[in-house]
Image (cartoon, rainbow, N blue to C red; front, side, top):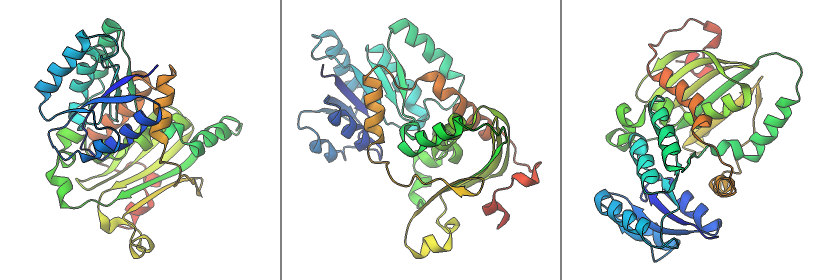
Length: 317
């Protein structure tokens, strides 16, 4: 049965992935919201999307649809808004009788999850999060391989993610830690979620560097120790990457062996949507461990206690 979707944050970077997933799963985008009207991308998916730049009018429209016949009500709200608005937009979705599909992070402060769970129970609707790396074929294969290991040793993981951003980044909500949660939350949380999913619960963490453009630290998981480095500073790119004119460098090694998952990202949101529509999908409790971790990172004073846990890129500084 075809489902009706509304989308919040239609002008954002990730929104087209959600529009594509809605269409490819045979469903309909019926309404969209963004304070920016640079949303011509909508025409690539439908000419019949009701569009709003003011939340109040969008809210009124959604309530009107809720009171109408089942065929016009909104079944799901896809949330691609700035991080600090996710909590409010999830509540909006539940209030109008829709399920929420929210980009990471679900919330900035993990204690807000409990209140949302209560709303789930009150409304009978679900909150889903987009943990797309968990559906990446290479990561699924790695999880299967790790499950078959009997060594009991802790793996050594190096996580390096550098994605170049210009001055605009720090004039947007992404550069405001109160709105984005900072580098670890904004660009790191999907990697942290993946590593927790693969290697178990967080036992210990320390932060070695905390700047507006880059962060680094050490995490001990049940079955791995992780040295991590995250940056939006173009100067941190390896020289060979700079020479190739590539703006992003992504590397995860396990015991000095590179994990190859550079491809296969194009359809991950569609896979996430298929799982959700089939009654599966990841929810609040799945998101909680990585949210607890990035909240801890955000509130930790930098200091190096474990010198063996220093990321190689930090050693070069």
